[in-house]
Length: 215
Ligand SMILES: [Ca+2]
Image 1 (spheres, helix red, strand yellow):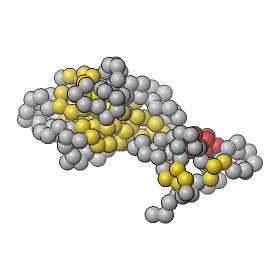
Image 2 (cartoon, helix red, strand yellow):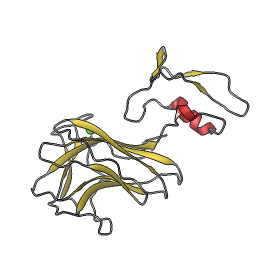
Image 3 (tube, rainbow, N blue to C red):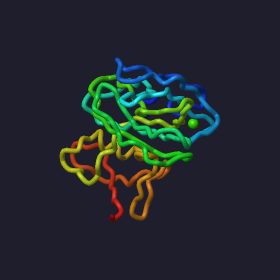
């Protein structure tokens, strides 16, 4: 599968990203711009300047994201950089149930946060949010390397119900969740070194032999 986020690396501009009230649920953030002050990849990231919030208010920045398959489960992952003095954030997705845990107390360093959700329509608004009260002005945070993709199948539950397309996804996948490559016993999946293919059951076109490391 491909990343449904069209502009998640911010190497050119901030196209596709916005802030809105989501029918009154949020206070629109005041500014989202491409910044070269810091980056998780390349030289650019998205800098959001949060509005002043009172208790009970929230604000978010989001990307209207199309191409979902209804009923498919997705993971929206963000690398976020929260400077000292700025609030925790979390992943939120509109028009479906998705609210991640709040980011940890990490400050002045990149951290990965994500939320999982099941698509209910073609377009979902994928974003990150903060909650009030926030007493100061100029509160900022940075985002980079945003990915929305199907969640890799849980190998621990592979069984006869597994669909062919899921297996092909497993074979073809070169990055995993937060970007780390899954470790193989005696091997590592890599761009130039796919998992071993073995003879497949009748009706299946492809299959991967995968040995997960012992916990
Ligand atoms: Ca970048």
